[in-house]
Image (cartoon, rainbow, N blue to C red; front, side):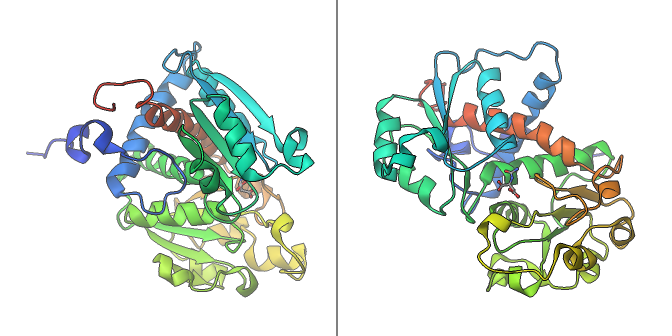
Length: 336
Ligand code: NCD
């Protein structure tokens, strides 16, 4: 007799105890069941978003401010679409047009946003820790859309959702336990790497990180990952290859000899991919530097590249986060 599927109720506590946090500032510190709860909540929105009629009224009447103090294309668009699909009124604030350019302090910006009585604020900022500073000053839930080199929690969650669904679709065990994931590239400057490391190790995956010495953070082993400088060795038998962009905007001075040499040592080519497990999947948070950290024929490899699926999962994941974090405001039963 096969054992029954674990029910959702047996995976995490009921009501607000399933996710008892006011904000989503990072993945570090979240319990495995809290991450799984958010992933499970997102599943319904994946299906919903594939229907022709996508508008829901769950957050109708609520105001969400997307305050982006740093450039973004996909994350801003993804949060905007997520809020609108749930029926909220969504307002985008770009730093270039805001008083930040006139020298307003972060605290004043926070107080101003708060006075507008928004029901959730999504913030991206170039400084690590800036999002928490704002979160401490406002009365509504804050979602971190990327702060400096620190964290990008919804990216970590959407990547975990992408991996889990790809395992399921290929008829594999969808547990993260024992899954081998290699994250390669500019680990030093990457908030995506940090959120993914926290997310995947918390869920039980075996995470390897690979970077040239200058782009490997000191003491990275403390995050329960295995560091590599040799990409071929890091790829050996891996199930998931996650590539990172070189974050030139965060580099002062020269961290790599040349893009050409970087590709030679750390670029994901078809030949290199062959070192990973036979059906290993490829991921990249975007934006990609094709021909530098990843070759086009790998990025576009049908059946193996999950890069566009990551974008799709991003909207569903952010809908789930906006729903869960506003349940207290909306007086949802069990969440008051
Ligand atoms: C990432 C970011 O901004 O941290 N992009 C994203 O959110 N999809 C990664 C990057 O910019 O390289």
